[in-house]
Length: 119
Length: 394
Image 1: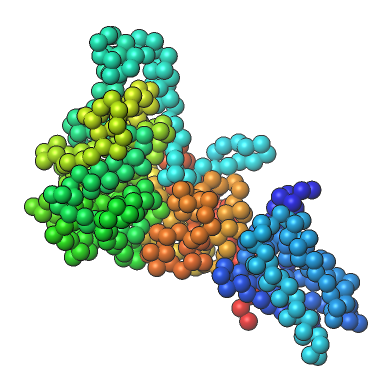
Image 2 (image 1 turned 120 degrees about the vertical axis):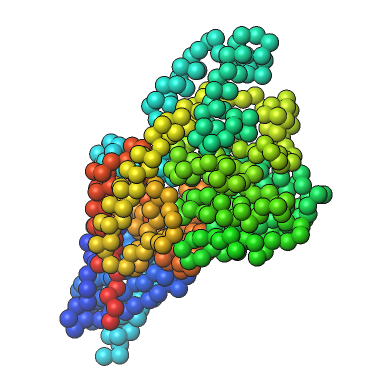
């Protein structure tokens, strides 16, 4: 599946969209210029992200990239997670001028993960 | 509805361009294949040119008929953009010595008008850009309040291409009476949609399009009042066609097509307008089942074929991508390449996010009730999906 088809599929199906987990972690970030908002929900078991969901208001590139991003978090340590945003942007064919907006994904995950450290 | 492989697509972008009417296409095809009318319409020394010229004069009379004008007031152009440019640049340059270098227009004009005004600013003219009311209206008082001794031209659109809001042109023309200020109307969206009578409108110059009312793309016209006849300077030079104001061989088949489109619009007149109003209201009634939807131009008189609706709480780009079954516009089609929110909607006070989350749904002769219902169902479903996806308020 090419980037255009993948973006379209994730935008339409949003398989990992969902509300907060009971007892889970939540982080939010906004992109002021576009009024986009990303909220990431994590379920963490023994320090490992076992499930991830999101809520989002934003463009199709942001939605598709966010869906891929939360998928990539599963089975990662909540205190040392890694996100290859550039590869994700490439996978969904997001134009380079959207990279600033896509950074809200990383900010939202970080905000959620900080919640684990503070517990 | 149109079948694109694997998918039905409903066309609701008639304000951008309306499909060529089959009856118009038939007249154009006949013209293109009529070898007896294959001459240059300026070559009236032989029968081939004479027949082409006759066809053009018939078309001129047909276009004039829709606006209550005499045929000799019309000159053909390549479209409404050229007509706007000729009217604004031609009138301003042609009357600066007599009147001065000040123009009045509004912030919600088509880019053909704004671009021409910006060019005049580069040439030393001053332009006052009026801000319409939140309903999208420019009043006669607003215009008269900014008139100056050196005002040469007032240029406004009769029907706004994004909101469909109609200008009270007769009131403005009344206010300008006796002041020697030229009045130009961009009627690209108005012809065939709202009643047009040059004697009622009172404008000196009126731009007309062909492809907005099921005629061919690539042809338009400029009405130039006969008495008193405004001074216009041409923008291009050559063979002196169209009374020296628009040089270039006339495109007979295009002009014949425009004539046929205007003729059909004249014949169908009020009945088609009433049908479009009913469809537009049906669509708006259905969309109001969603919370937080806003009609742009609410409270103002609006043309029958345009419905501009803003949807709070959704991203504009996501909304458009989520509606592949609808051919609609998010604003002016000419701005479609830009992701910037519509300057027209921002001028009406919509914030950037709401302006971006706006759909312009425009109807035409081929629009059916089934299509309107289909569109409403798709929009409601997609707005609901996107809002459900959005973060809930804590």
